[in-house]
Structure formats: C-alpha cells, structure tokens
Image (tube, rainbow over all chains, first blue to last red; front, side):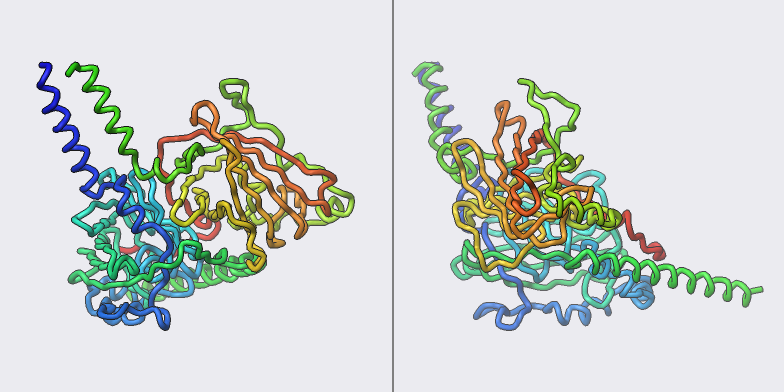
Length: 268
Length: 236
C-alpha cells in the first residue's frame, strides 16, 4: 500500500490534466481568448474578414427561408400583421434568430456558463448558455429558448430548443413553431481577431428542410463600451405606443370577427 | 509514502492549479459571481442583519416636494414596464439579479431578471467616469474595491426616472454611492445605497438591503406581456 498511491497520484494528475485540456468551462485558455467585446455584423465595412464569405447574409435570409416554409407557415406569414405581431414592434424580445445573428455582444464566462450580453432589444439581449447541464426536461418556452453547449475540439457547439412561437426567423415574418431547433458552431479565426458562428436552423413543423448561414464578429478592444439602449427612449414614446398598439389590436380583432361572421352567413 | 502524504500532494496540486475564475479575481477581493435575490423586509438574518430604510422614506427639499406633489403618479415608469433607475431597483421587492464579473474587459455586470425595470448595469472597474457619455436611465457606473467591499459610483442619469413611487424627482446632480459586501461567508450580499442630490435632498440618504445568494437560474421574464397581449391567432 505504501507504494501504490503513486499510481493513484498519476491517475489523478492525468485526470486533472485531461479535464483542463478538454476545454471545459473552467479552462483558462478559452476564457482568456474568447471573452470580451464583439462587433455587430452586416454593417458597411463589417462584412466577412479577408478569405471568408458570409453565407446567406441577414438582408437576403428571407429569400432562403420563404421557399422552405411548410404551407401552413407560408399562410401564417402571409396573414401576419407586422405592425402588431413583430416582437420588436412591441418591445418584446425579438427572438434568438432576430436578436443574435448580427448584433454586437460581449461574451462573459462564469462557472458552467457563457453569457452573451447584447445591447438593444430588451430581454433578447441577454442570452445564457449552460455548459454543465443537459436541456431542461420541460423548459419554459421563450423567445431565446434553452441553450446548452459543449466543446468539439476548438469549436463551441451551442444547441438551443424550447422556443415559443411568437418570433420571426428573418425580417419578412417567417414564422417558426415550438419545434425550432438551432445549432451554432462557434470558433475563433484569424488569431482570435474574429469569432465565426455557423448557424443551422431546423423546424420539422415549419420548414421543409433546414437552412444555414454564417456570421463573423470582429473582436473589439477590451475597453469598448456601447451606449445604453432602451427599446423606447422616453416614457412618453412608450405610452403613446401602447395606446396605438392596443387600438390596432382591437381593430384587427374586430376585423377578424367581422370576416368570420360574413363567411358564416355565406355558408348559411 | 503514507496516505497523509498522498492527500497532501493531491491538495497541493489542486491548489497549484486554480480555476480560471479564481485566477481572474484580483488578489484578496471576493468573487461575487452568482444569482442573488432580495431578502424581504420582514426577515432578520443571522447576526441580526435586517433591511433598513427605503426610497419611499426620503425627505425632499421644498421645491422638489412641490414638484412631486404636482406629479401624475399614473406616469410612474414602473407601471409601464420601463426602467425605474438603480436607486429604486436595488430596493424593489422581488428583485433577482445575476452578478457577473468580466475580468477581460475590466467590468462587472449586474443582470436583472426583470430586465424591463432594471435593464442591466455595466460597472466599469478602476476607471474614471467618461464625461462624453450621454445621460442614461441607469447612469454611468464606475467601481473600485475597498478591501472586501465593491464601491460603485454612479452619475449622469437622464430625467425619466424618479427616486420613489411618490414621484420624487431628481436633478442632473444625482449621484449614487453603492457599497456591496458579502456577509455570512458569502451566503448574503449587503448592499448600502446612498443618494446625494443637493438640489433635491436636504442631506444624503442611505438605505440597506440584503440579498441571498441562490442556486437557481435566471428566467426570461417579459414584463410587457402583462401590459399588451396581442390577440393573434395561435399558430397551428
């Protein structure tokens, strides 16, 4: 027994070393290299870095998604009243795809978690990605969903489910269901000066096939700061908006009720 | 080699390889990372620690009091799911927040579960205020460690928030000094908030709140859903 513990020590050392190299949440390497400020994308002068190409840029994503919509989702898109139903119009969280595919963000690490903090569209700005657990069994359905991640070599694979069905996938009211499933593969490129995100989006109820796109975010200096951003800049704007919006919702409901009544009469 | 030696060596190795988070925290300053929720006012913590004071109890100079009296209280931003400012937020019943240090960028984030009332706060550490920044709902916060206490100094607020639900105004001279200190072995966070505004308050006012560190996740809470609910057809 006196000599046996050396094997035990070696085993423990090996285990500790393997854990450190596996790129777990507590690996100092990725925290030092990854956390910090990242610029938004799709702005003039902020396209893909040299040697890389943006696949399906935000401004052209509708062209990719609309042909893939299942008939009901296409009909739902056609019937969407943008002014009433688009989350950004109501200062609700705009959803993962609308809020996080382009906008700038800060990545912050804490034990078992990465937090992506973006400026702007309300609760959609704060995204928590868990590295130490599986998906929740019955996650509350939200615009950002339930995100978990693991490392595959130097790539962080982020898997998200648990979405509500209120958000759009792209600008032109492309609707998804609660079966939306988003997988992102994040990796640092060009000596850590850019973060590449490869997105794969699937929704077996709303889409005939998955679609994909890439985004590149330039790393900004550590002391970079955004100005505070509030969805509606003054209380007066907000209250005026609530009034207008409630009127619009009421009007739309009345219109629909009238249409239903009219169609019922025709059937008689 | 005895078992005692083995244990010592293993302990030594683990000590010699601290986590990145431990490395990130500066010297003897405490690691405040975690989720915290406000302890209710009627609870007394071990050691007799208890919330004291309230934004609702502040005294105002006569001109400010007259302005508050003339204010339409239905215009309270809290009623519209709009930001109420840190002076009210840190004492707001039910407040739950994530404290998240970001050593790489020299700042501390304070992420509120009720994002609509609190937004989030970015506290820049060991740097002076930036006079070029525009006035903001949550002001401009800088922080520094004084021993075991994080001291946060906030100025440059916009004019949209009040100091309490009775419409107490503040001027552009409002300055908040907050002191965050872990107590009872880090199970609780003591928060002392002092408001200074020589145009509104006869003297600085301080209240104290305690937050309990909790092992839970922050959920996505959408305050505005309670205000405006679109009657749109459910998706099939």
